Image (tube, rainbow over all chains, first blue to last red; front, side, top):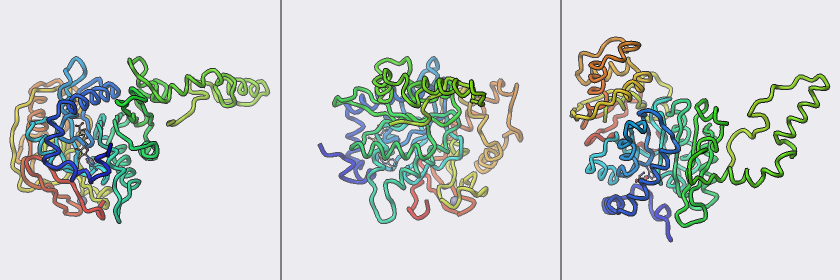
Length: 281
Length: 126
Ligand SMILES: C[S@@+](CC[C@H](N)C(=O)[O-])C[C@H]1O[C@@H](n2cnc3c(N)ncnc32)[C@H](O)[C@@H]1O
Ligand SMILES: [Zn+2]
């Protein structure tokens, strides 16, 4: 199947006709709604929050944010950025509550530091990989986007980006750019290996509740149903061999013990001891 | 565009990122619309902490609001429902539908049409 990303730039692909078709398709509406709900679950917002919707389109993702009831921590206010005037026009006709901007996320995120509690992006950021011209490259655009996004989120804030990479190289290019911008990052995959597999890039800005949950993505989704964490599966597979492997927690504890007995100063052990820092993909 | 949003918006031009004159952006020829929204006091309280009060006063005076307190409300004032409702009205229910936002540093004008600001720039500026 051909990818729209390979056919035209986004502002041309999402013209008036395509934007209307996209927004009125009940199949698409259902998928976008369920992915947005999944992203919200991963954001785990406890209070009415200020959220950036990256590539908001006609508002299918954003309107879910406005609709979160008070019992579930909402309703949230959102700001949407999109490069397609036609998509935004449909959003206007649908009377969505978000504040809309005609903007190219590959040019950055023009908000002052710490503006948003959270960000979501549903089915948009893979478009950043398709930009080849004399003055821009996909890498440059990804760097500007993630750098701007990182700065615009408050400390402890999170972003969840559902995206459709064309292949592993794109998936790596996108996640590596997020990490370079400073994010703690992990990838979560729902229904892996099936036609409806969905990838979520979960990003954290240092110092939030995540740290207290162990500092990695597996903490975010602990206790949620139907979760398949790429990260965690690998962990489970390795768990047996891990015990005494060089660099493992057990191994480090043993070494520390030996050194201490020799009278050397060792750092106190914590739950982080022997954990790998930073993201794994 | 909502008054709240302008309090967080910066000029997108690269050379303006570190310039104090680039914030807040200034409204020119603004046409306002008022929209009734459900009162969300928790959200207003959440946002007050990070609202730049000086910038808020600049923006509201440009838009013709004259009754914004000189100091940011804090402490007990945050439980004053009348105040929260007033802030809700200005921050969320007041929208600029047409006009421009102008950068005080590079003078770039961002057009606002039907409430949507155009932040697309030529690549050499970002
Ligand atoms: C599949 S739609 C998703 C829209 C919305 N998030 C939803 O869930 O329905 C992808 C959107 O990404 C937008 N997009 C693609 N590249 C973009 C860019 N560089 N800057 C801003 N928006 C972009 C497109 O215009 C399009 O509206
Ligand atoms: Zn400027």
